[in-house]
Every structure is written in structure tokens, then in C-alpha cells.
Length: 115
Image (cartoon, rainbow, N blue to C red):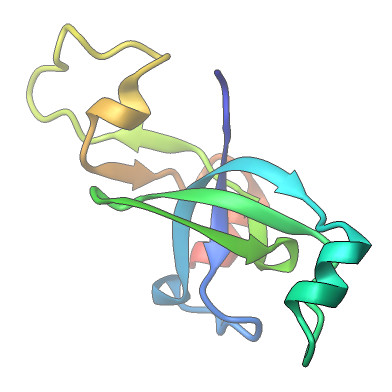
């Protein structure tokens, strides 16, 4: 199954520093039903659109974030060392590799975000 790799902001008002961002796989974008929102959230309703995200940080972590925190798509290059492992395929490299480089030259918007 293919998931979209995105650059995510940690905060609503992220500054222009790479430390304010992380990389994750967007697995699902969804909205909560109105009935559930009224019964589950009495103080402040959640954002209308949410995303289920798996983070690519070497640890199995996932969370649900507001869609507004998704900044843009990213192009990742696996850090495979001197020789790429033969078991890495395009279908499993995101799960197999533990470190990635973010290509800042895949488009001009990514370059301006990262530098």
C-alpha cells in the first residue's frame, strides 16, 4: 500500500527552522462525525479535518494531527551507506531503512522551506 510522505509542522505557528518540522507518512485523512464531536469534545471541538500519521524517526510512533500541520510533500533518499542492502525495495524501504536524507532540491518550495 502506498502512503504519502509529507513534511509536518510540530506547531501551528512553526518558525522557518528545520527543527520545527518532522517527516511522516500520511496514512489517512478523515473527519469525525458530528454526533461523536458533540459527545466526545464538550469544551473545544477538534479541527474539521484530521490526519493519521506514522512518523519516520526510527521509532514506531503515530498520532492524529490537524491537516493544517501538513506542510508539503518531501522527497526522501535512504541513507544506505557504501552498499544498498539487497532486501530494500521501493515497496519496503520506508520500513527497512532507519535514516533518510531529505532532498532539498526536489522543488523550489522545498528548498525555500528547508533553507
